[in-house]
Length: 277
Length: 298
Image (cartoon, rainbow over all chains, first blue to last red; front, side, top):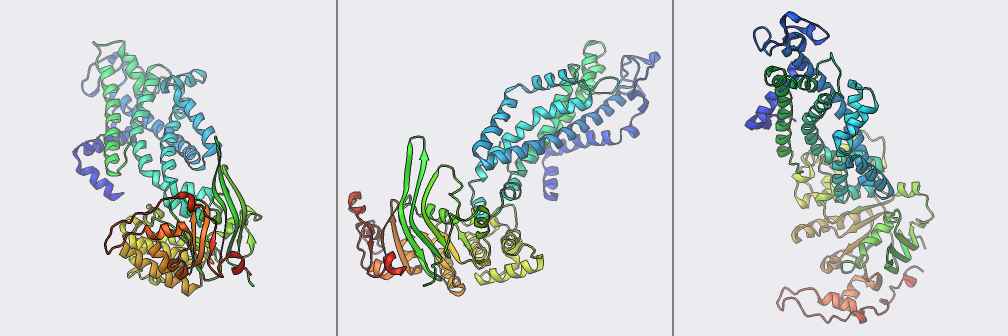
């Protein structure tokens, strides 16, 4: 773990990734401290100061009702990160458990589980998430449910493939011979061999979860106002391009930084941990 | 007379496929007494390894496998055994264990050797504490001539050489004092000098522990050194059986002769020409004087 961190700081690209992710995480954690107008997160109106280009103290400018854009972008990171963590925390265990069971047990279990996974994979991800959001109310919680529902099959696929090949390895046979239980073999023998791939994919996916969640709110199906969200900020500002450019450029850049940062780290991890995809 | 450690009688195995059943074993019979080292020799695909898997009860779970015949372990018929008690037979004390072809891939690369060793010991003694396990593991590794057992216990399989891994495997397989050891082409993945070394070690250990061994191999030289008795298997039939010396000096079955003459001579001549007439290889079983199943099991 420590060694991985040291290697990460040596490579210039992954160092940039670490810095970008560090900025995102720190600003989300200390949002109350670093933002000049914490009150502007909610439904605040300041018509004397609306739609202003970047100036001091509103370094990102103000939105259409006069709220500080910088404050809202930083708080939106908080929402995005929570969403990313929750989605992966639910989707990864589900996907991994199903993938392990299908890959190791084989037979009818494999057939049923993998066909079920294929059904989910056959629907374009955004369409699936949109239809779930359409059925439910567009809130943060339901957004998490929708993104989770479209995310777990990818982990099932990943772990299934590794489990299928690891199953043929000598140590699995050896464990069967000394009489280890199926659960033991799945979670104590095969799973540790999948961990590098899972961690790499999780890091890469963190950025994509943020992107998908932003796409959903861009389409008006995600987090609802007045809660700040990067996607809905971009959507709102898009109507006023190119005159009020700061309304879209800063939230857009914020998405870019987060996704780019997580991707750089994910790529570097893939090389360090020797995972090939 | 007491029950042999392992007795297989008229074992048949077929695999059911879409296009009908493929017969793999056509009724093989063999037995191993306590402390006896028996070799099962044959070319690849002759049914050596599946026999071992059946003894371990690992093919019975396979839906496509059709098995008939008797497999008795210490007088207990494995077929009539409940899955739970069969499960208990594997790895625990007074039972069976196995050594595999490729030692390095048989050790899970994500755990250090000690973790793996403790798991093996836990099969026999579920509540074993770390200290006792470590002491036992060190003793077992010292038994297989590993110089720094403490360092090896902290290492991962990929940090050790193939020969060391093989010795670790042997130590693990014998850690719980099994009654029967199934050695499926041990050391095939190693070079000959290391192979000889580990086999000698294994030989000494099984003698010390009075372990019965079913030694599966295609390497005739190794078999000659190691085994007390030999069964030659060809296409799922035992074709010849007898004492090691007698069988090697005076092979009777056409297939055994072909097998023996197929060994290249280091003194020249290279790889010999073998008359390849499969029809005569299917001649019936030849048992050396006093070494047929009937005579031995009296």
